[in-house]
Amino acid sequence: MVIVAAGSDAVLRGRGQGWSLSDWLSNVVLGALATVIVGILLARRQTRVQEALADLELTEKIAALRVADARLRDQCTSEAAHRAVLDCRAGLALVPLARVPMQEEYLRAAVRMVRVLGDALGSSLEPRATWSDADWEYLRENMEELLKSAEHNLKGASAMRPIWIDDINSCKGRILELAQGEVLFTVFRRHFTQSQNRIRTLLDWNALARLAPPNGNAVWVEHLTRQVTDPAALASYFTVWYTRSDGTETEYDHPEARPISLASLAEGTSCYLGRERRDRIKDLHRHYAAKVEGKDIRVLIATYPVRVEPSAPDAREAVVILDGNHRLAALVQLAREGCPFTIAEFRLHAPADPAFLPDLSHHVPDTFDGTP
Image (cartoon, rainbow, N blue to C red; front, top):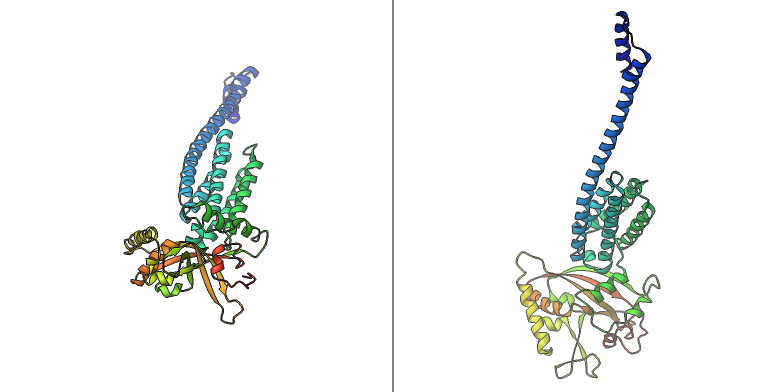
């Protein structure tokens, strides 16, 4: 602009019409000032447009995170978990561009989603039973990247930044703990005391918790997966149901009580059981038989293994079924008919002491000291 003005002034001076100081002020200085003002106004307008677009996209991300919340609460699949964490990461990049109220609304939604994920993983054994090692590794990587993205994108983005970072970091630590290979006793306990499939035997949860990490190492949980094609593979498994010498079902503390094995149920001796229990097993048998074609049958169970006559060189193992008795009773009959099934078994390793589970008195001798 100055060059053009100077050229114009030279031409006009050649004609005897050069600009005065007031002409320069009005045509150049004021013109430049107007340009600066217009630029500032346009920049502000552009910022508002950018904020509006960022707010709009974050609103969509918040809606996606709420859907993710619902899915994780319903069923914590690996796909749902990975998608939720990726949605969190994608939204964080938009936080610095949005208005402060929207920044904080999105961050609240992101922290809430991560907490829901941690609670889902900490209250159910289904992810441990169904996720692959690659799924868990991908989750660990995504959580690490989520925290890095938060630390990078929240610099100066909000006065609440330290709180959000601490919240996300705390949730990340919990999820990474749950994503390790070890099955935590706390998860085992929550699953079998708060889910639909609850352990109803007289298991002393509080006493076991005092011996489990971080309090001790005498109690731990092992995850096993096996496909059963022959009921004989479960010959050492015993229900928490009992029969008397006359073949009628009775309680565990009856003087004549003897535990009923899965092997005997597979052979069709369910006549030992009461009518209500037999009817339930028949209903489950029909239910699983209808699922055989084109779909693998899988059940999640809890067991408590004990060594019988531990001092003997060839000491055998008895596996007490804590949860899954009715389902396994139906499935071993189905397996005998040629239909395999898969067990996701969570074994509670603990002292073989009836003080922890009264049913153990039927499997360990009175002189046994209870060492697992």
